[in-house]
Image (tube, rainbow, N blue to C red; front, side):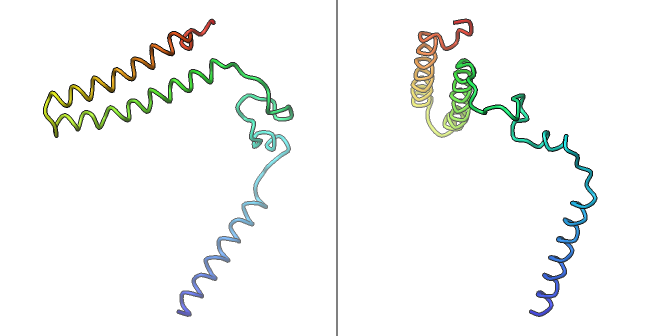
Length: 117
C-alpha cells in the first residue's frame, strides 16, 4: 500500500514538473492569442457573435441531418431482409421510402431546395 502511495506521489510530481516546463519553455506571442480565440472560423474575434447568417445554410444542414439519419436507418433494413420473408421486407422498405419521399416532396414544395429563392 505504501509503495502505491510513493508511486502516486512520484507520478504527480513528474506530471506537474512537465506541465510547468512546457509553460516556461513555450514561445507564445500576442498574435498566438488571437489564433486561440473561439472565433477561428472566419468571424472577427472582437466583433459580436450574434451576426445574422443566411437561412439557406441552416436549411441545408437540416436536410443533411435528415438524410444522414436516413442512411443510419436503412442499414438495419438490409439485415431485416435476412430475417424475414420478401413480402414483409418489401412492405417495410416501401413504407420507409414513402415517408422519405413525402418529406422530400414537402421540402421541394416549400422551396427549401432552391438556393436562389
